[in-house]
Amino acid sequence: MWLGAIGAGSALYAWWESTAVEVREHRLSVADLPPGLDGLRILHVSDTHFPANGDSIGRFLEQVWPLDYDLVCCTGDFVETSAGWDSAADALTQLEAPFGVFATLGAHDYCQPVRSLDEWASFNVDRLKGSPRRFVNPQPFVERLEAAGIVVLRNEWRSLEIGGELVRIGGAGDDSVGMAQLESAVPPAGGFSMLLTHSPDAALRMPLWADGGPSVVLSGHTHGGQIRVPGWGAPLRHSRLVNRTQADGVFDVRGAQVVVSRGFGTAHVPLRFACQPEIGLIHLSSGPG
Image (cartoon, rainbow, N blue to C red; front, side, top):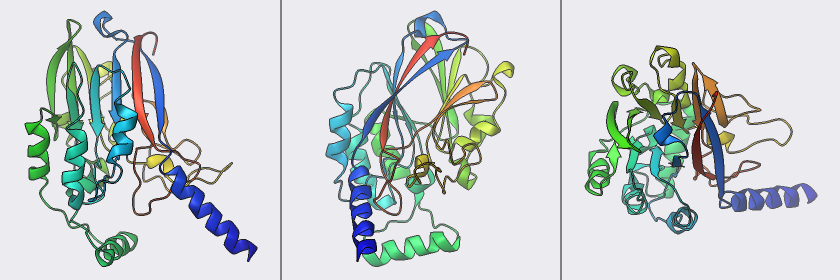
């Protein structure tokens, strides 16, 4: 009886924690940061996993709207499956920033729609078996984001000017399913460059910072483990870059600072334990890196 009560209590807590969103701030000292970018504030949104019914949109916007930022960067898995495209678009198209909103996609944004309990069970059993995923074309979702002014980067990059400085932002496909084409996603040398990539493992293959690679990389995918064992770490991380004791945070990879978000949503089960969901607020400053 006691074991059952403890299990039920833990599950209830894990459900509550999945809704307890933290605004997590990172202050990055960047060695080559141009003077005009000193103090730039970036809203980092990742792994929202919006469901088709959109029941987490209000919680998301309540956290975002009070924040003060200059640029928005979104790193994929906006939905659990393509059934959530409309909900995700309803939320993401409300994001605005003086220097724009940039996004890249994750594998979940391509997943076949799941709308019933039977489909959900089949979807997750297939994942556990390691069956190949069935993808759909996300173009309708992408078009709706782009119609609202969001720049969706699918293995490509764009230039913009911030504070009189040249900034290049690249967006890679999801490296966890072989979609990242870094030769076209990583911006060329010159100016200040950033890379958005859903899976942080793409950073392990990008050019060295000293050879013109990006200075800052924003990513997600790991969910910080989503379910952590206190005092031990995260059993599941789905990334070679992170480890069980540090499944999210800031990493130095090939001379770049790589930020791995815990993400806003949950995947497969609506639970988190010892791993709060997050929305990131990144402050850039000049320094030794």
